[in-house]
Amino acid sequence: MKTIKKIIFYFLILYSFKCLAYELNPLEKTINIFGGTSSKYDEFIDEGGLNYISDWYGINISAYSLTFDESDDVINISLTTRLAPTSPKEIRRVINTICDFKEKDWEIKNTAGFVAGQAENQYCFASYMPYKKTFRSIFIERLVAVSNKPDVEKIVSDNSNENLKNSINAVTSDGRKVTLKVDGTWEFVKSGKTDDINLETGIEIEIIKIRQHDLIDSCMITIKTTNNLKKNIQGMNISFISYDEDGEYYSEVRTMVDVIRKGKSFIKEWYTDGHCNEGYKNYLELQEVSWCEIGGERINDEDCYDLVSISPNSILKIVK
Image (tube, rainbow, N blue to C red; front, side, top):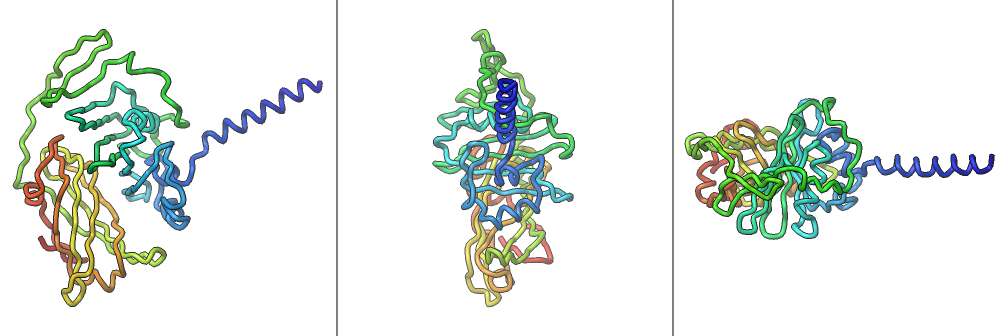
């Protein structure tokens, strides 16, 4: 009888540890396309944000941004992490479990050390790519309702060696797509004609909200960026200069825009210095657009700047 009790006791202990393994930390609950909400985001910021915890499924996060839908649920997330020690394989491992991707779903691009990947299924669209010299950006967008999330319970290490079981999509150094087969052979992927970038449609920027965040003493500016091009935007940096009510220089505002698919919009709330009633009463001036990648190609800063147009609004004037 004592032996049976001991077995039950140790079983309960092991079961408790198993249950604990499923518990998400506050950052993972916040940056979560199938459970994150604006209220969880406010709670996380109140606790100290990334200064409180920066571990996201084993990946150390340097910066992030969230976009919420009409129900205040997280619909897409943008993350920044250092190139080392996080590997592309580790990033895919996490995203595969969140979105129920398989390794064969990824389209991998490796050109002159530029390693990037993207994948899409009925649940998510996701991508990762280098950002500046020492960082990597990660983007995940939810394509279904939160209630239709995949049946995934926890993040686990990828020991399945699935790469050996499935063909892999890759890109050659000259940009041609190929399929690497499990038998060691390969073939070029047939693809349709890609439309050129249309300079007349461009990228539209619009301010949709301004609010004062007294807790962190910051003016929050929400800007909507719409991709009217015929290609996906993989990322770009946008910087503005703000002027106070006297027309004097107040501060510089910088942000990183992540993946925006053609015909879609990216809404991001920016943290800025100072109070809304002090430095953001007059106007913002679009200063620079840099690190611009469209359709998998780097676009020089001047051409990317020319692609951007400003949408008039009644909240805060933007000039170019």
